Length: 160
Image 1 (tube, rainbow, N blue to C red):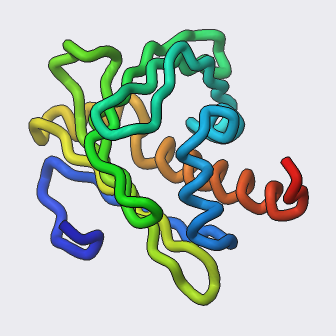
Image 2 (image 1 turned 120 degrees about the horizontal axis):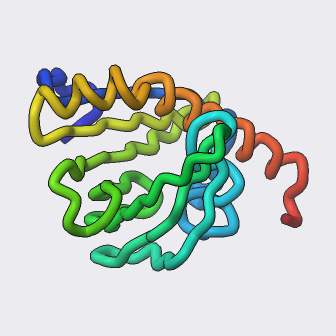
């Protein structure tokens, strides 16, 4: 599957050029100390409970909304191709019937790294609900903006 494949009515695709080398952008996904600094839409923070960035392993965390609401999250890393691609399963827990899969593509370019997020839902209704009720498109764009800001800040502070 490549990022330019036509989308179905069960998919979302968001893309962002990040000013930074692909290795640095990819690394932002590999350690919890990085993820906790940028993961999620604007105003959200993240508390990690367990984290193992290995295929088949999980990241369990709580996202704290700006209104004080806590959202349990669970991610299983399904496939990791360093530094090209990450495939994950995401829900509120391992038994969540509304889990969805996401693939992050990291394309090295002369002007930075193109990160493309492709998310597939089990049904078109779940996709529509994610967009309407949870702001999935705007939230995805904000998350990639946060990643871009984080990577740029790390380039200014290379010893962190």
